[in-house]
Image 1 (tube, chains in turn cyan, yellow):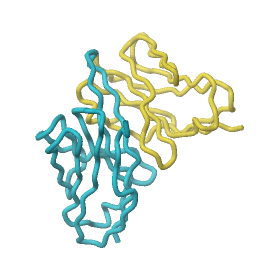
Image 2 (cartoon, one colour; image 1 turned 120 degrees about the horizontal axis):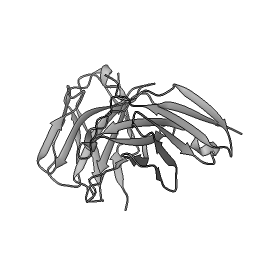
Image 3 (cartoon, helix red, strand yellow; image 1 turned 90 degrees about the vertical axis):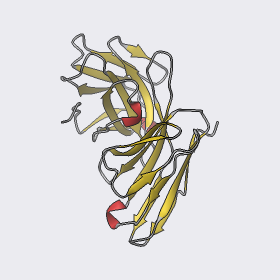
Amino acid sequence: NAGVTQTPKFQVLKTGQSMTLQCAQDMNHEYMSWYRQDPGMGLRLIHYSVGAGITDQGEVPNGYNVSRSTTEDFPLRLLSAAPSQTSVYFCASTTRRDRADYEQYFGPGTRLTVT
Amino acid sequence: DAKTTQPTSMDCAEGRAANLPCNHSTISGNEYVYWYRQIHSQGPQYIIHGLKNNETNEMASLIITEDRKSSTLILPHATLRDTAVYYCIVNVPGANSKLTFGKGITLSVRP
């Protein structure tokens, strides 16, 4: 299994540009999430999905859109990039087991700079 | 409101046990305690979780007090590669797509 993959690894955008951060997992996990991490801070949840066709907002959703058309993919779209969105973005997927306890698997991250 | 509180940092000698404390005095009956770590520039990595019994796996042990208001993550033989930020999180199973990460504790393992 490749686990959770993210592309690109690095990206520089100009203010106002749009782009999509890609996330894919091959573990057949139902739950997927997007987080951002700013320097010296913990991770903050942007959006999450509990299954194909179902998404919801996290702690900091403004400026971002998501969709979940397949179990495997969970892209994050920046509609009009702003310098405040300069951050490291992590995608995660979550196991689901009979005991109702779970663990998250994180991708390697996308480092985004908006100038 | 912070659900957990952790010291900002600690260090330990290589080969010794690292005991990382966490307070979660407002934990509710159906919330689990999870530990993750983040090695510099990488995505967080799951370590262990528990409800009320002590747990052990190949990475670490988790000791939860009887009143569940605090816990300790134990790395039995710390190595330089264990230098990382360790996050203690309480969460309800089924909501793990929405983990709340605080600032964690920075563990530095010295040679």
